[in-house]
Image (cartoon, rainbow, N blue to C red; front, side, top):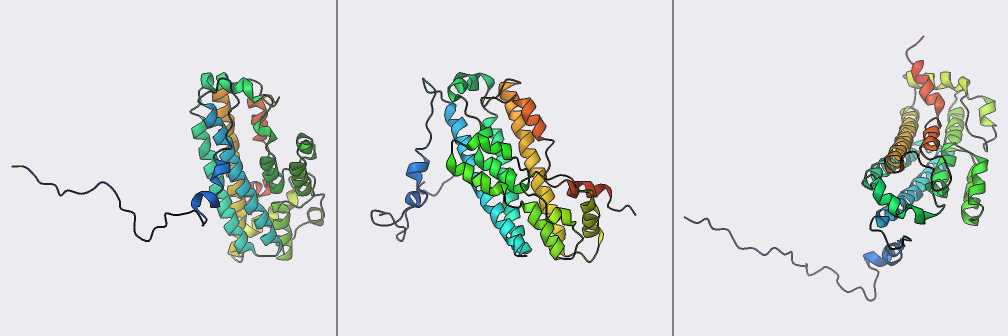
Length: 289
């Protein structure tokens, strides 16, 4: 006895209402400017090495995500400044998802073996991710200011102007602390009037402020959530740094970076940098009378 299967076409018909003519109207490709985006990959290895395309796309997509992250952080900072904290938290929620995507991307680059990378690494010259002005901009707006980094971007006036502006503007943490002051919390004057071009340094007087926020039942939920979101952002940033370090180590070991840094040892030192140290220090004090 033979079972009978109904005959069906393994093809989906195009519905009558689906537009197929884009001679005089905007298409998906034109809206996203895909002609330029997809033609922006230019391997420099001679002869062209197959795996260089992975290397280029990995870094180009990272720059696109960094652009969106910076877009959201700038808006979050603006919203906090005008006491729209709830809306700012939505921006931070998106930032956290972007960070996770960026961290996961390292797993794709990790498929590049040391031998494969060595075959085209020499063609990269002195180019290095260290020179990413968008990455530096994200660090600046989160509070890791470093005026000396501007020198790296002197050959790119647009990038230099962006970083110079961010250097002299308050960080996300600065505006959050100012918002806490407006909400009645005892933020020291030295914090409110500090030189925002300087990197943030641990301020002991802020720990009891955050202890109150975490322990008091009267704390507005948005303030409590903002503190936790900032902790998440820093945790995610450190996870990205660590994943970066490990991918570099498995690919080039302890060789010098293409940009002249010490490579893995240089990346290790970045793990000691912190954006919001008081939000971590307060955890030791919570529940302690």
